[in-house]
Length: 140
Ligand SMILES: [Zn+2]
Image (cartoon, rainbow, N blue to C red):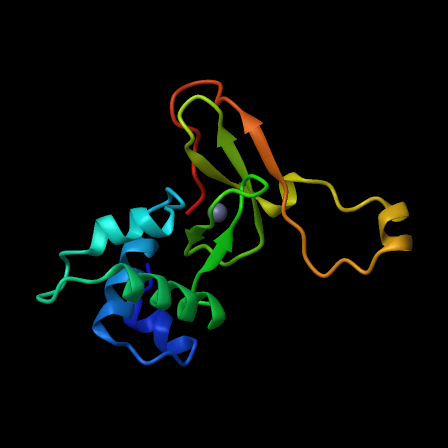
């Protein structure tokens, strides 16, 4: 797996300590955490405690640079952060709120009628339900 430093360098982002710890945390979780969950996880990772503003600003910088992406799984819901920047879809477990990555190819391409009327630049599909047994297999 790529290290946080490698990923930041590949996007031309200067590896400040806070960027490294946040990127590292996101690379190592598949849970699609909210900004507050990221804050909770990394608050004490450095000698100086990370403030909420620092974590929010750092997430913003990382999204802008394409190191991570923002994911919205419900209208008006809060942003979640994902180090998987490949195109993919999501499955939300309605029992426990867990979010799983679904391969982009799992969803058939757009119907021609949509293509005819809109210039689609990007799309993502979110499924809701329950995994059939235990933890679904995850691509890595
Ligand atoms: Zn994802």
